[in-house]
Length: 175
Image 1 (cartoon, rainbow, N blue to C red):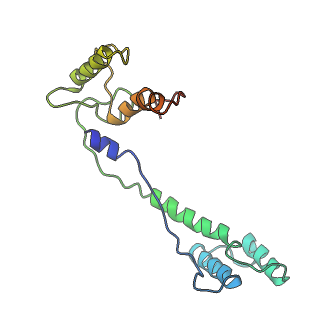
Image 2: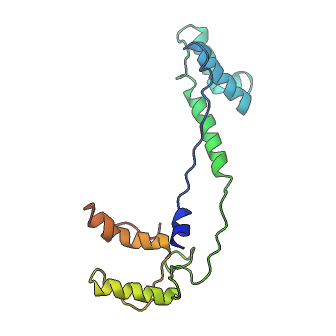
Image 3: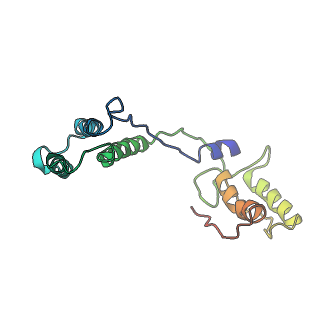
């Protein structure tokens, strides 16, 4: 149960955008390749309605500026950002079936339990052990029953951050 709840906690997303024009000589040819890729994929307004095109053409026409990859960086960033957001919006997830009492902190996941103990008896035992070790002043009544994620949030401050890393700032538990 612990492994399943912790494993599904973090979601990591990333995208890779092929660098347009990497086969071109440095300078204008690379910038043109980036601009053409953006135009093909995003179809910005034609003519002078697209502000980027208006500025790009004004600078290159007057010979004041030789475009390069830096010129089209905002377009490439926009493409990568669009791909990243599209991936995140897929909302793929594995269905998790968790039976038993829900966590009293978040209410999203099942409260931890062990073997033949139900969650209430398990947390009575945990609270009693912590109280006997004089690590926490918790009433051993089993009213608080936590999932793996909320257990980490509850104990990481004192058990890891303060004791091992000497970090004394408090963390909010509801995030």
